[in-house]
Image 1 (cartoon, rainbow, N blue to C red):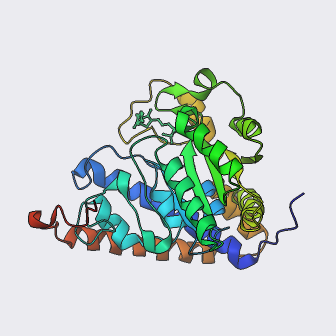
Image 2 (image 1 turned 90 degrees about the vertical axis):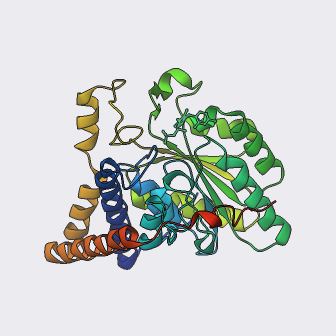
Image 3 (image 1 turned 180 degrees about the vertical axis):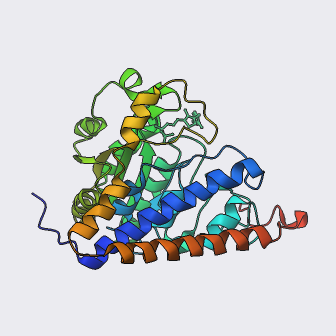
Length: 323
Ligand SMILES: Cc1ncc(C[n+]2csc(CCOP(=O)(O)OP(=O)(O)O)c2C)c(N)n1
């Protein structure tokens, strides 16, 4: 049984701030893409914010995460700053990867965010390697590998769970099961109803969490982090979640019904959490208002910064490539 994990008032406020920041960041991305300021396929995380926030809040700042093609929320939750993030999405020199990574390949090693990737499941072996390095160096760092339900059908997922289990690596595999891999529902593409069951095949601890419940995710991840740091090996956590938006911005979503989407959006965890903070007398309605205004102002500043930043000079395009 997990030991009792206390969630302080400050932490609850922080959960709200982070989830709201991710939501607003993604809404801004949706606004900038059709203007041509962000280019390429872009995937937003609206609806899944509680997973990144709850999970990353259980880590130390020098722990690692590895993200997916839907990675803006992971980056913010791991301590990424809005200015270099927005600049990266706009392809500018002031971005985390000097604009060479963009939305799908953002990384910020300084805050332990080892990278996102457009290649589905490719983050899982990178995360497993990071966890192996921590075990080898005995530095007690823990890694979280985020991936989707679709990625859990890729061979590398199974190879990495096996290796992590036999080597007792300090890693937590977090499957964000939003029910779809682009247009394909998990229920017709995946052999099991609950992806967490797959941990059994690798003699690994597992848990299923409500992906809308930031506090539950924090508690379950904290417990897995503690075991990983104590040398007790990996955990597979499946977060049942839902993406409120299409697979990418512009997805016509012909594969799922309007009523399904509307019903899911009507249960918005962000609105519910706001109400919960008021009910628990943690923040008043007016305090919530000022928290929101501050975040919105920071985001406007970050957007302005990104717009005004220069593009990288073409002569520097091959810099920072290691061989
Ligand atoms: C190796 C590989 N195969 C296929 C694709 C095309 N593709 C992009 S996203 C995606 C679905 C991913 O689904 P999931 O892992 O559930 O993540 P979600 O998009 O739902 O967050 C696919 C198949 C790809 N990018 N890489």
